Image (cartoon, rainbow, N blue to C red):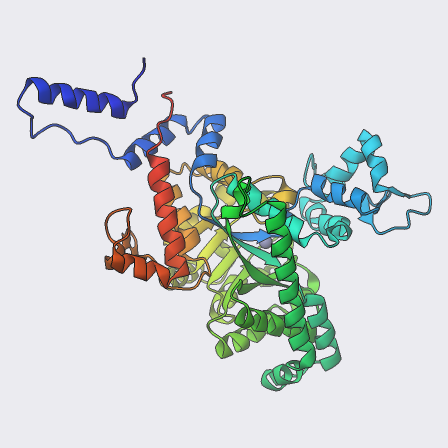
Amino acid sequence: MTYTPRALALLIGLALSACATPSTNAPPLPSDEARTASYLQQIRERPPYLDAFLRRMPKGGDLHSHLSGAIYAETYMRWATADGLCIDRTKLALVPPPCAGPDKVPASAANRDPVLYGQVIDALSMRGFLPVAQSGHDHFFATFDKFGAAQGDHFGGMLAEVADRAGGQSVSYLELMASPGMGAARAIGKAAGWSDDLAALRTKMLGPQMTAAVNEARREFDAAERAMRQQMRCGTDSAQAGCAVTIRYLAQTIRVFPPEQMFAQFVLAFELAKADPRIVGLNLVAPEDDPTAVKDYEIQMKMLGFLHGLSPEVKISLHAGELTPALVPREALRFHVRSAVLVAGASRIGHGVDVMGEDDAPGLLAEMARRRTMVEINLTSNDTILNVFGAAHPFESYRRAGVPLALSTDDEGVSRIDLTHEFVRATTTYSLGYADLKTMVRNSLEYAFLPGESLWRGTAPFVKVEACAGAQTPSPACRAFLDRSEKAAAQWRLENEFARFEALTWPQQ
Ligand SMILES: [Zn+2]
């Protein structure tokens, strides 16, 4: 028979109390949290054990996940086969039928041709990628055009895949980036044309067509969520793990279009967020080094700042500083993060990889720490797209400056990872302890765009609001507080998950 340290300590404690006067100097039992931290220290050099531990560890939210990039290539292939799509053998892309011509074969043909199947999976993802004829950056972004046709009407299936993967690794909250309605918005922008008078331009764009785009996007979310719940059998005895995951959305605008189309996308994103509580904010995506994105960066930030001034309740997270000197001229490295925070009003930054190259980087970091501007850290994505990893990544610079951080996946399907993978990577790369990880997990809900007051009245260290201080069972005052704050309720659930996780007994190493 073996005993865990906790059981042994209990037995020793019982023996002592049975045969002697209890000593007031006996060392206190280690807390569950301390035991858990100690176990992590034991296994930190053994990735398989670390993976099992971190898979089980509550991870709160993934705040930076592009829905289309979160789907694995095998799923896209399955849908392409079912929907009668074709493979363009030259481009190794999924394309609509007819499958005519020497280069096009039915997607189903790949199921009988393992070589072709493997080539397509590699082309739709970073699997087996070697930067020989193409950079990681170019291969990565090219995947989106190659699998785009397979999305069809699988919005609900996409949600189910991502939600269930989250539920299976103790992720309780997702803020997924998705773009319903953005094509319609760009058409409105194109028709409206450009004007420097943003107020007048907004009024011009806010007409029946914009209202229709909002309503249609909301209908798409409704239908997708229904399909997702059905696929995961939510509400039945055989409900999948994903049913327990809370999902919210960020309206995903695409940064490579002319100003009038960009502004129309932003207007739609703000209107969506105001109209539908599921859409908790917006983001700006696509390669930041795209020539149009570089040229128009400042005007795009001004547009966002203008709209945020009108509707400050709509939260903004921005990809900013996903750049290196290899991708863009020096000028573009000097201000993107600062401008996202100070001009556009972003309360979170995605990536922020080039931050140390910005003008007055120490001042910028101090300002971000003061404002509590959280950075969404995507380690694998930054490695494969930007070739920035390890000590060259600003992870430690942010930490030292006191800027809040949380780990996220970016595009877990394309990168063939999950959030657990990113936790393993961060733990081993930056020698993180349990307290460091727990802080990032708590940050993922503290800086989530869920509405309501926080459970925490302080975050360094984390201290609960008075109404909810104390035990795992909420008092009536705490219950009332949790009932009126979605954010605090999610945070309370996370703390209970931590309590259960830390009570686990792990095999001794
Ligand atoms: Zn991203």
